[in-house]
Amino acid sequence: MASKLWKKNTEVNREIEKFTVGRDRELDLYLAPYDVLGSMAHITMLQTIDLLTPSELSELMKELRNIYADIEAGRFTIEEDVEDVHSQVELLLTRKLGDVGKKIHSGRSRNDQVLVDLKLFTRARIKDIAEEIKVLFEELQTQSERYKNVLMPGYTHLQVAMPSSFGLWFGAYAESLVDDLLFLQAAFKMTNRNPLGSAAGYGSSFPLNRTLTTELLGFDSMNYNVVYAQMGRGKMERNVAFALAGIAGTLSKLAFDACMFNSQNFGFVKLPDNCTTGSSIMPHKNNPDVF
Image: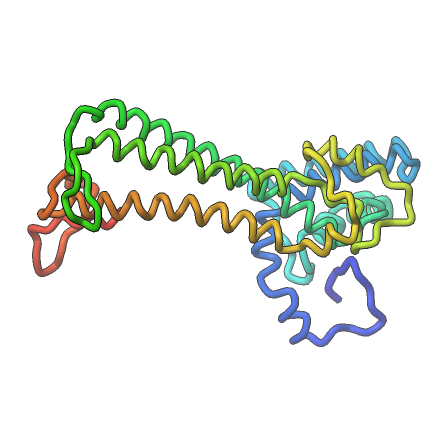
């Protein structure tokens, strides 16, 4: 019988279970470290409201650290008969500690648990992307200054219009990325709100301290309304996707220009041979396939 956090008196039809679980085990591995961090914050809070004893908290924290180390080392897996990462973590704790392991779920639903995991995961990835954009921005600015006096025609409708400079072209994309980062920053702020404690959308009968878990997990604030915390599922992903689409749009335009400027009709730039590809029928070609 598959390990589940929810219980039914009858076994679910295997086809239905397969359909609803889908690729959860595979995708949940991305969430595994954040699931452990969320659980650490949650049980720390549970001990402050006397739902865990200090010794139980100590035992659970020790095992959660071990699980986190296994995740970081690539040793963590979600077993075939286990539904998701939440169930796997709880199962590992229960094997080690008995019923104490089950206490990590007190005052929590998988609904707010997966929301926390997704928000922590997304927050980390947004920071990674922002750092990568910073590197590109600085390079564009450097090249803008370097080539500010190198003249090139400015085009409108692909027709020569005004004198311009290569530096101005680089700088345009640098400034475009600044605007893109404003959208990404907004997406980050909406992401960085704590849903933990909203449970399945109506909170918990336990006196949970949501302010404490917000502080422990480094969130700026929380989703104060527990109904909205669940009602807004998917909204974070949409907001982040829109922000990423803006960045992708800037990079796409930059790439198009690079392809065009590399062509024989323009000849403004020449990409290194080792950064281009060829043609099976026209070996003289240097195709800008990277761009």
